[in-house]
Image 1 (cartoon, rainbow, N blue to C red):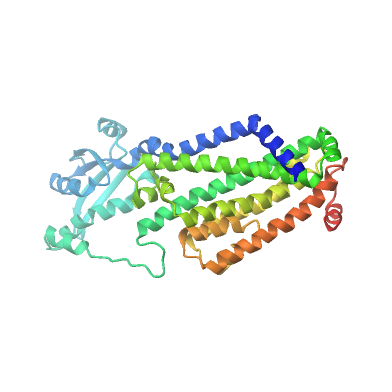
Image 2 (tube, one colour; image 1 turned 90 degrees about the horizontal axis):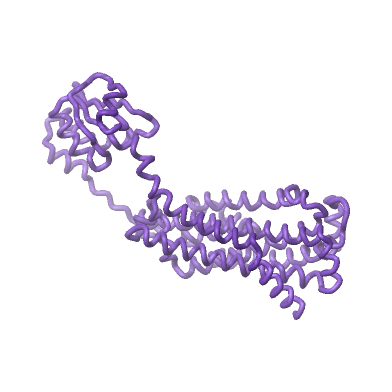
Length: 409
């Protein structure tokens, strides 16, 4: 136990002073801030071409259409011109993104759009906004009657759902999506950092002195515990920063959290305690599983050039877990998603995603915890055996048959 504490303290001190940890923390914070603020800073620039329009055609039509379109489009001018516009026309109207020419036909209304970038023009929104005018021209109904018909009441009610409205569900998915990426980057970044540290000690021959004076298992577990502690510190800093900036960037509420804008992370400040606990518990389990695998794999490396080839197979399950977790946000109760939420290495991502967006039965959460805690224990034994032998094994990278023989003991 004393050796474990000694290694843990020394590793904590070394990693806190290391440039890699500081750079990782700063880059992570910058990434969180950029993720929150960038959509608000650039959103206007990306929307300009598709939302600034000129209305052309019969003044009677453009006047009525202007009222309907102003909630979704910025109308920078009107014109009676019905011929295709040229660049000079668009420039004269504040560099508008599109010219919408309206004409009355037998069946109602026709809109012809000349856009700078057709891909940025939302034709569905344009059609929806002009629908009342189209109906009025095609029928003898009054504007008030058409408006009343279009405002058909739709009452959405939940069936065995944890959310009371679609806005709340969208907000939960937005928050869960963000936290899943936090899990992915932190687990992968810190596991690879640990692997590089082990490989560096071995290639510099420091490992021989360490193993000679300290129990290899105490050395391995002390390193992993220190790395896990700092990973949690990083996680807390990133989540708190996202919650503060996200909450300050919008008025809050489910609608803000669900919107793909600077307020998309405002819901981080109101995560239910059960979900928050599940997030940190599954983060720790996932990190411990992968960190031990990466550290033991690092002990097999005799040249730092082999880091990529050895770590590659270990990254594949993490990438797969990320994609399955994203799918779980939309289909949390699909049989294959439920099964994946119990599988070690994948479960920490998938089970958290399910907890965030659905009412997961308590027995499934408990079973996943038991399986993954057991997986941590089994992996720690196997990784310890591999680490003990690997740190003193030099030369060419061992073959899979040799690795399997070492694990079997």
